[in-house]
Length: 82
Image 1: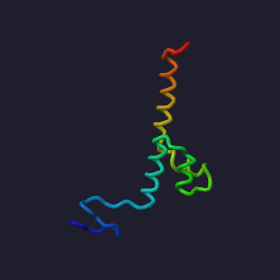
Image 2: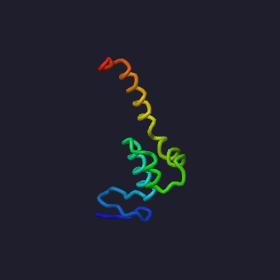
Image 3: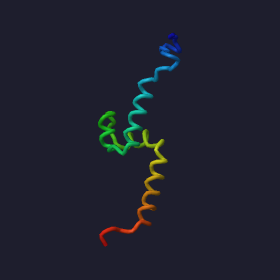
Image 4: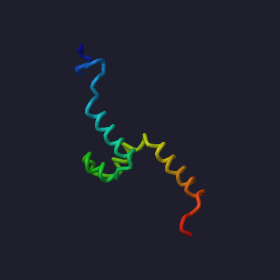
C-alpha cells in the first residue's frame, strides 16, 4: 500500500526523507565515528571547515563528554612501562 504525503511517496508507512536530511545524517554520522572533519568538509563541498563544524557538530555534545571522561579514566590507570 502506498500513498502520498506532500509529494513524498509513502512506502510501507515509512516516509522518504529529504536529500537535505540524508546529507545532514551522513555528515553527522561520519563525525560521530571520528572521521576527519577535513574529509567531511571535502565530501560535502563546504568552502570552510568552520561551516562543516558549526553545522554538524552541534548534535555531538555526548562525544565530547565521553572524550573528557575517557581522559579522566586514563589518568587513574597505572602507566605501563614506567
